[in-house]
Picture (cartoon, rainbow, N blue to C red):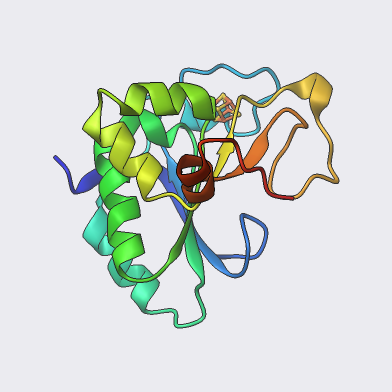
Length: 168
Ligand code: SF4
């Protein structure tokens, strides 16, 4: 179903998962198996719980201070249909959307050429944090990401300009 996502949980108000004050949705299900992953409970594709994207938007609307939504994981792109709709609905309400993925931006672009769900999730993401967590590149001082290989990518600018626009 387009409007249902399987999630590990939510944080209704976060100051550390992207710019401003954010509503964070943790996708349930991930097959990247990053060594040192901080969220192993999010890996099981049958775990967590099912929620509707409309319910998430209703919860967000109750907090006028929110700047955006962060889609984290788990791996949101494994549920690109539902999370794409989540991102789209958040954009339609004027929220900034940040998405974390263990996949690389270039691979997401490739997949998006033949998969409308991946495309919807990508195109409704303002900032993508891409790549697997790599323990040997871990750095606690990095903004909004765990390891140095991960990039904060301005999705719209990168697509418009045809070259990677990395923030921060
Ligand atoms: S992508 Fe994220 S949730 Fe998945 S294994 Fe890597 S760090 Fe863990």
